[in-house]
Structures are given as C-alpha cells and as structure tokens.
Image (cartoon, rainbow, N blue to C red; front, side):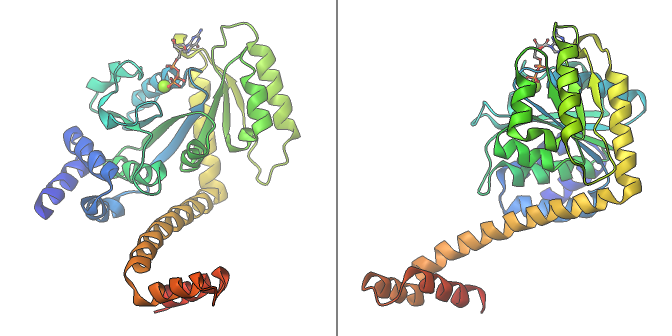
Length: 318
Ligand SMILES: Nc1nc2c(ncn2[C@@H]2O[C@H](COP(=O)(O)OP(=O)(O)OP(=O)(O)O)[C@@H](O)[C@H]2O)c(=O)[nH]1
Ligand SMILES: [Mg+2]
C-alpha cells in the first residue's frame, strides 16, 4: 500500500493528471491513506495562488473560470480548478458533466479540473478541500481556483481558504442587495458584476461601489469592482489584472502570511476538534471513570458542568 502511495505522490509531483485525480479521490475519502499521502506531499504545497470564486447559483462563475483559465494559460501558468458541487452528494468527483463549462481546457496538460461533491467526512467539506488544494499545489499548479456556490456557512469557510476571494454578482436579481445585507460583501477581495450585457449592470455596479464605500477597512486594500461579460470574454483581462494586483498586495504587505496563519489555525482547530470528539466518544463508552461518572450524574451526586470538567481533566490532561 505504502508503495502505491509513494508512486501516486511521485506522479502528482510530475503533474501526471491520472495521479492527481487518484490523489484527490484518496484525500476526499479521508482515510488513513489520505493522511499518509498528505504527509508525502505537504512540503511541496503552499506555493500556489489560491483564488476562490464564489457567488449565487447561475451568476456565471464557471463561465468566468473558463475565461480566466485562458488568460492564465496564455501566460504559461499551470492551473488547477476545484469546482465544489453542492447538488450531488453521492457522485463525488465523477460528474463534471455539463455543470462545468471548462471542457475545452481538459485536453490542455497545464489545466487540471475536478469537481468535488459538497459532502465531507467528519468535519465536513472544508477538511478534504484543504487537502485537495494541497495535491494541486504539490503538482506544480501556480494557480488553484476553487469555485463554490452561494452564501452558506460551508461555502464561506471555503472562500476563506483562498488567498484572493472573487465575489461574483449579476444584475437584476437583487443579489447585490442580498449580499450586502447578509454581510457576505466582507469576504470579497475583488468584486465582479458579470452578465454586463444584461440591463441593470451599471446599477448593480453603482450599488456595489456604494456599499463598499461604507465599509471600514482594516487594511490598505480597496476591493475593485469589475464588470464582465464572461460569455463574450469581455472584462476578463481587467479581472485577471485585479486578481494579480491583489496577490502583489498580499505579498508586499505581509498579509499573505497573516492570512495563511489564520487559515491553518482554523484547519488545525477543526482537525483537533475532530480527533477530540472521536477520542471522547470512545472514552465515554469504554472508560470505567466515565461510566462511574455517568452513574453519579444520574443519581444527581454531581452536576453536568462539574462532570464535564472532570472528563476533560481525565481525558486530556493525561
Ligand atoms: N447574458 C450572459 N449570460 C452569461 C454570462 N456568463 C454566463 N452566462 C450564462 O449564465 C448561465 C450560468 O452560467 P454558469 O457559468 O454555469 O454559472 P455558475 O455560476 O457557474 O452556475 P452554478 O455553478 O450552477 O452555480 C449560463 O447559461 C451561461 O451561459 C454573461 O456574461 N452574459
Ligand atoms: Mg458553476
């Protein structure tokens, strides 16, 4: 088994698409193999620019990603894309199908595209996404794009795994108003009003600009707003320039390291919480100490808060 994993890891490092696909399937399953594989690849990760593309269903995220890939590959960059698919809990990575409009690029050896289902193991999707990103980074992709739908908590969590988060809106849906209301604007480093060909695009642009003016910023970065028409490839170059400017800002301000530290802290917290929960369940079922404690609780000889304290001391302070 081990040997297989190291062969897969070698393949990933050589940007072999079959190995990359296999490696992502392994980390998606989150087994012991996944841990071993991440151990092999980890020191080769951390070098890509992670770009999150997020927004409501149908705003044109995939079309934008498709157009961005063309820009990026023109510059000789290797690009990895993870499209997080919220609607297919059981099919895993196999259903690229017509939901992803990046088919033309799949023959390009510098582009690797994968859809991941929005179901996770244990702690949810975020944990396996972190590792899938690592696989792509280790494979030498200078750019890793994560496309996520929507405004839910888990999507926000994924957006936060990115260095640069691009929030995509479109005219005429009240989407912008919703985004402003729900506080989602705060996650955007770059804003896109896509479908610029539709009526109301300028209005949406003005609304977004106005709401951004109201924000108080902790950093010197001011999120730009770009109007695009992804379908006709319009505005894509501007968008790509703004994304690159944001990366420069991250590099030059020290913000990149700060963000990555926050991110890894979130991941570590989730991992430890996961382990702690497993450990706790096991201990509660198997230790005489907790069984005795449960009896005492039932007899009301100890209150639940004090009992919890005792459990923590007993399990974690060994
Ligand atoms: N008019 C217009 N339509 C566009 C534009 N960009 C994308 N579309 C259309 O919008 C629809 C949705 O595009 P997608 O790229 O699949 O949108 P998405 O945000 O990835 O959708 P989900 O992944 O399902 O959330 C498609 O029918 C596109 O052809 C645009 O610039 N103008
Ligand atoms: Mg899409």
